Structure formats: structure tokens, C-alpha cells
Length: 216
Image: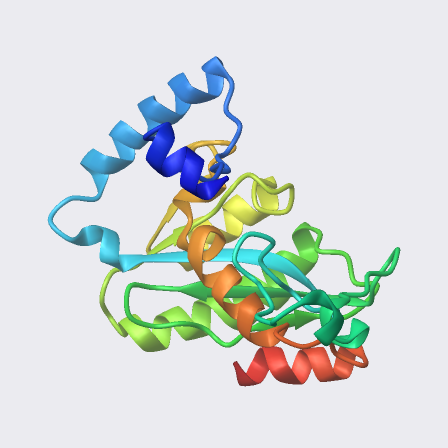
């Protein structure tokens, strides 16, 4: 089949691409907001932005359906334990928060099981106890900017008030383009790299997962 496609039909084989679903309204608003942000951060000032995000990691192994493969002479030579990737209905998991700048990262903040990230928890445990001291130490007296997406605890009035009082500058949820996870390097890059390292093998329990997350 590969020979026919290449030699007889003169065609090449391409994989599908996954893109963020955007409505026409989303596209227009995203374009308008990106123009404003582009003008706002010129001359390398974008390097002062602290990008942050939360992500859930599970104890299950992570693999790429497109590129993860097993090399073997035939199927019979592959044991079922190697080829099978087990999945459960609700795997044990942990949520973490992290942030990066152009040249530094913060330690991960592990959110304990059962703890809901509401506006109070977000302001105290993450912004006050993690973001502010880490960014303050890294930038010292230099100017820096906190980025917020439109998660409920991020766009809460309490969060905005805290940011106004405690950080030099921030990109509010109103200024950040909605449905634009691909604009945050935490989403389109960092989390996937961390997951591929942390979940290269399945974990027996959450504590093993936490240790691996912090180590990586």
C-alpha cells in the first residue's frame, strides 16, 4: 500500500493535526486581544511574564498513540504484559500548579486530594505562598507580570483585588484571549514534557506519582 501511494499515485501520507476549536466570535476576539497584548509587550518585555497553570496527573502510564511503537519481528514475540496498557475508570490522580518565566520555573504546588481550588485557596496557597515569593526572588526589584486565564478562581473579583495589591502588573482574564490554551507555554509545551517523563511507567500509588513530579 505504501509503495502504491508513493510510486503509482505520487502522494505523500500526512497525519491529522489537533487544533484548538474556536468559533468565529472566539477567533475575532482572540485576534483583537492578541493585537493589544502584542503592542503592550514589545522590546523583549514579554520575557517578564510569569505564565502559570494547573494540571491533573494520573498514576497511569502516558503514551503517544501516533509515535509510541514496539519493534518486534512478529506479534507472537511480544508478550501481552509489554503490549497492553491498562486503563481504569477513575485512576488515582493529583492536581499541581506550576509557573515559568523565560528562564526560570517555580516549584510545583501539589493540591491535596479533596481540596477544591476556589478563590480563597487560590489567593492564599498559590498566589501568596508560591507565586509572589518565587517571582519576587527571581526578578528582585525588576518589573514582572502575572498571567491569568479564565478559570473560575482566576477571574474571581477577590483574585483580581489580590493581584492589584501584590504584583507589579498582571494580564487579567478579560485581557487574555478565551479558549486559547495554545498561547500559554505551560499548556502547549511544559505539561506534556513533564507528563512524558513522570508517567513513562505507571505508578503504584499517588505518593509515588507526587515524588516523581517533584523530582522531574
